[in-house]
Every structure is written in C-alpha cells, then in structure tokens.
Length: 264
Image (cartoon, rainbow, N blue to C red):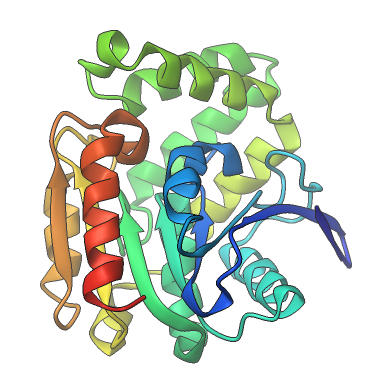
C-alpha cells in the first residue's frame, strides 16, 4: 500500500487488526521494511503491526533526507491509518527517528523500543566517514559500500549462523538507489543530539542491543537507559547491529515480554 505525500509516496504494510495494540516498526539505514518480517509474523496475531519504507528506501519515493522529515512521514502515516498513539520500535536510524518523534510529540507514543541505536549526534570523525561513504557511492562503487556495511553490521558468528540474513541485507543495500543512500547519509550526519531529551521520556521504554554491536555498542545503550525513567534494557547474545535478524528468538522474547508487561 502507498500513502501519497507532497514529494511522492510512502510504501507501507499493515498486518493484524487490533488498532488499540498497534506497533509501528522503523527500519535502519540502508534497509527496508522487510527487515521486520519475523517480528510482524509474531506480533500480528494480537497487534496491528505496521511497517513502512523510510523515504529513499525500498518502494518509497526518493526525497530530501532529514530526520525531521522522516518524522513528518511517520506522523502522516499514523494520521492516515487513524492511529493517534502507538508503540514505536526503531532500529539504528529508526531509533533516531523515534527519539526525535517522541521529543516532538510524546502524546503519539504509548511506548518506545530503541534497538541498536544511540542518542548523541555524529562526531566530526563520524561525519567525515559518512562523507567518504558518499564519495564511494557517487563513484559508482555501491557494491563496495555494501560489502563494507555488511562487515561492520553483523557479528562474526552471523556470517556462519545467519547466512540468509547477511545476504538479505547485502541485496537490500545494493538495490537502494544512489540518491536514497546519499540523502540518508546526509540526514544521519545532520541529525540533532537527543541526549538531553531522554530524561523527558515518560512512555514505557525498552532498549535492545546486540552484545557484539560495533556501531552502537552496549555502552551507548546503557547511557540511554541511565537517563530514561524506568527504561528496561536487554543485551542480545551473539548479535551485532542487527539484533532482530541475528538472534530473533531472544529479540522477540524481549519485545513480547515488554509489550505484555506494559499492556501495549
């Protein structure tokens, strides 16, 4: 399904029917909504599970990439679906979108799940790294960019134990347009520091992180947990930056328990 916007369209899917127990999943960079398939199959039995492609990814139209504009798309989708408040689950870039969203309008969040993400803005070194990634992409070396991403994203054991997930992500990255990749990298480099707003979060919060995550390591997750009132944190064993794909059993158990315990 598609939501028409001023710049094009946002591709989305809904599974399940219970709008009172709606959960919206936001994928990371540079993936698409299909990364949440396991979680959607599980939760759609008792929830309305919503996934969408962030602009420039998957089947959504390309468009100027800034985190605030991604939040605009999220809120527009919630309005379109008649969902005034939901639980939001975001991984990596999806977590950045969720954090900015709850800062802008906390009334739209019944709960928030922050997966393999962090609150600070990019350091200067990180911004320079993103500039180098843009150079690689614009030089027509998207496959090299995909190879480098996969090596960074996954835990070493996932290359043997989760080969299908590794190849799935590699193909998704390679299929994402150059403009989509570049726009998102600019958005990530330009994002605001959300650290000071963490103490204002009152919605039930779950933080999930892979124990082998090199991109946003457990220390970053703990830093968020210490600032968010009553936040719960789960470290997923044997997982890198894509904990929902690398150890879905442990990830799903943590997510289900959180939703059940908070009647979400």
